[in-house]
Picture 1 (cartoon, rainbow, N blue to C red):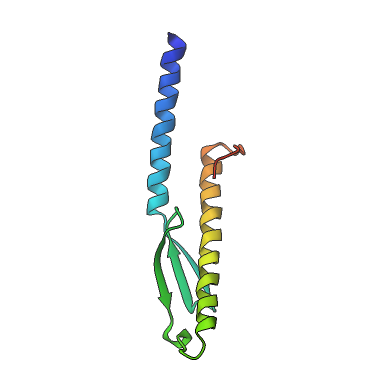
Picture 2: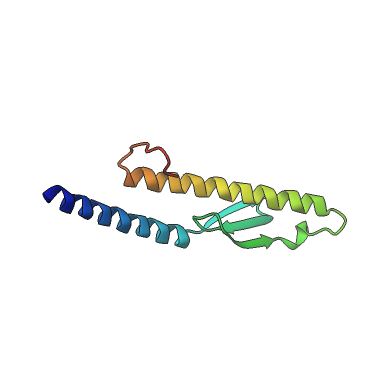
Length: 103
């Protein structure tokens, strides 16, 4: 029975850690940009888009494709930054171990 109690304790600790990580990811704010900062996309740690900022100079009705490309590029930049930050947080929690299936 001692092993069962230890297992339950470990499971509870793992659940608490997961809840803490999910909260941190929801609170994380990461900016990606393109066009020299003319387009900025803000994501949370779960890669949800929270905000898109456009410099008025980049809004040209005659060149919508360029604006679309800049938005996609800024989004990709933000995603790569989120992934790097999540990977760093996970490596600290795992003590530097590479655990398969975790982020």
